[in-house]
Image 1: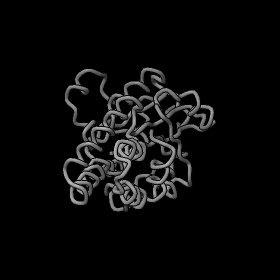
Image 2 (image 1 turned 45 degrees about the horizontal axis):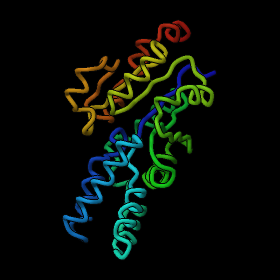
Image 3 (image 1 turned 30 degrees about the vertical axis):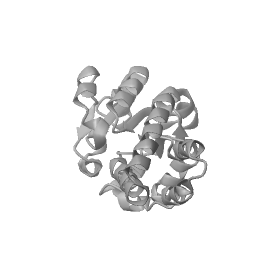
Length: 230
């Protein structure tokens, strides 16, 4: 049983996923035209609505089924799997992971498919930064029992750019979790979503700001741990 375990999201938390999406759109338009870009993205968004995560390779396969004579998907797959993800890390991301690891086990907790998401985590250098402690689910907020069984702790600190995820985990774990929102990416700035759910325990403008937070601030809702530390 650990005193505290840190669970850190990947997309738009440590890695600028909005920038990655913009790069994919620009590549599609530049190489294959706006029509191809728009159709691929429509398929991607349709899958997102059904799966809850963006299945880039699955969307590419569906596009190929619609256009069986089109050879473009073959080169597009290379662009996706060979994308330089390390260039899209937010400033301070690796330093934050190093700091958190000094305080307790630090695990990457993300949603995604079984090919592209692990590739992203590996090629970005994030997997190495946490000694390969990576959990990838379809819906991580529904996998809390599995997370607890793998990394039991008195308290958890969850860092995620999605207010919806933070609120869902808070509803289940209550005072056992400190929720931290880096205001990065499209979801963290969704005013409608922010207004409809409980606010996170801690909010920072960017992930690198956590370097200025001491452990006490991240455990402000964990009185049982404060007693242990004293």
